[in-house]
Length: 292
Ligand SMILES: [Fe+2]
Image (cartoon, rainbow, N blue to C red; front, top):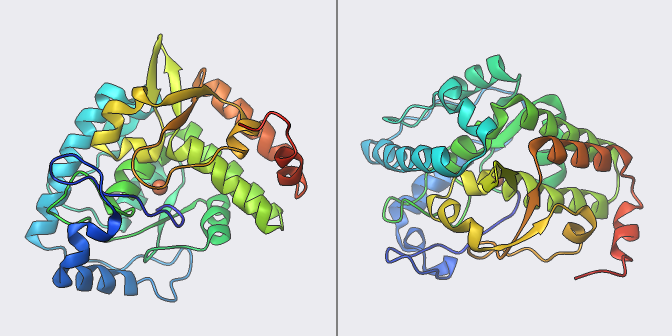
């Protein structure tokens, strides 16, 4: 799950087009299914069990096709700590797993669990729940006509992207640090800044590893197209001030990514920043004279 991010889909021939022209928008049966699964999250309390979903054969096939491709790409392009937990998380490649199955494995690995989302989640709730070890995840799948891209986060993004991150002790702890900060601070601007840093790191972060660049961001880990070509983006050093003042692209592939020098560098930098962040931090960073 991400907060309110709508991405432009890639068409079958690989070109990007507006979300309004995505095949899902012209398929009433798909929209009804997506709406029905979203409705299950109405009044959901964080931490309550997610309902079991009876997925169709087509949904299981879509999961399998995309999951197999993503695991293949992750092994080639993801950082070592992520690759090392793929087997431990052991997401199935022949059926859509239920939230409960994945939560049980995550719980054993890092203590995290999934909690149900029906789509857009309030940002403070989304971030704050991480302190308690809960990650909001949806249950619906992307449209089968375009299996390798989706205009909005689906269960593949949430489980293969965020789920894999949350299986690594280091990144799970970072989620908790972010949750603690969101819970502690009061202003809308502070929550927006946390969300922006989350976007450039845990959604789209890359890290230097053995002289190469590797992905650890969930959006990259769950997009077989983008994980193959992220090295073509403008890669900047990890810089919170610059990040806070960088426009992010919600349509299509990201033009600017931030690179940590190592996973230790990532966790040290983010933990120090979030632990020292207060409600005045957004205003201080906005006055930075070096704004790009
Ligand atoms: Fe996400």
